[in-house]
Image 1 (spheres, rainbow, N blue to C red):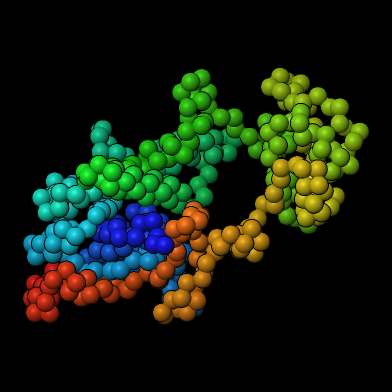
Image 2 (cartoon, helix red, strand yellow):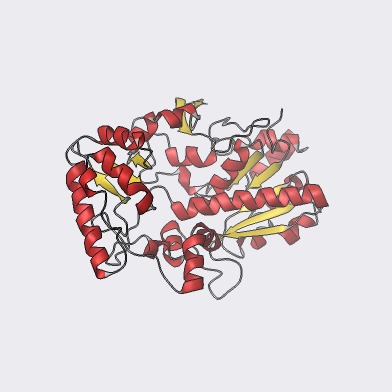
Length: 401
């Protein structure tokens, strides 16, 4: 069976994370993604990005992650000839995806109004920072500012309000990318059902609010913000993380205190405490919570993490190891579900990457090829589009490719 998006052709104008990860998600599901890069100023992630370069091999791990399964065409849309080539490619494309600031795609002739004249069924998808409307629509957004403006940085702040940004995984960028892929699939489905192309905007701000819908909707209805808690004083001692004797941590996720307190006591040998009253928001309830947290801190320090996990699981207590990446890499559930896959890289040999989380029984996706070299497929793609070798020479002389 073909992959679900096989036959869908995407022209990818995106750079860095937000857009490129979206097109990886689509290419993993069978879409043909052609990455369009400026001949002289390619995607910045091809450069020496801090934390993303393997010093032993020179492999840019961030770029490889964000661009696997694509082909690369070096094309300068700032030239008239480059725009003409792009419009020709757009005639046979299904989707054009970009993540530039407002106004850029219009200047490059890659917006919906410019492309629909060449392809009435075209779908254009834009990853904007703050949405197209409003006084700050033209502001750029990077992951940290995306988390800040959406309320997420305040939501995850320390109890004293100090923001705590965890870098590296670019949460706002990648949540935006997932919404971008979702919006693209919706537009493709609508076109297949209704025969119409359209223009799609997916903002990082909107994506981050969707991520926080439960707590944000609670705020909208009740005017409340989530409680600020810490491992030292959570709202519920059974919804917390604890350090074991071996220095490793485990997490309890029992939000129903009354249901799980007795099983936890049995697992930890604390039966004499089974009749304790549950914590609440009263002064006495908060003091009781503090006492129970101290009790659990002391008890968990008495044995190793995996010993406690086995005992807790025997009582059907919801718990997990707090794993670092080295442990996640070996996690039998990760391995059994192919959440790490091996990719044959033409330069670096076998490369392991995160696999595909969506498992389709009849039309599964697949991680296929490594990220392309800059402009690696320029000739191949343009020849297939009807250009001749002489045409390519002329385009090269004019700086269009």
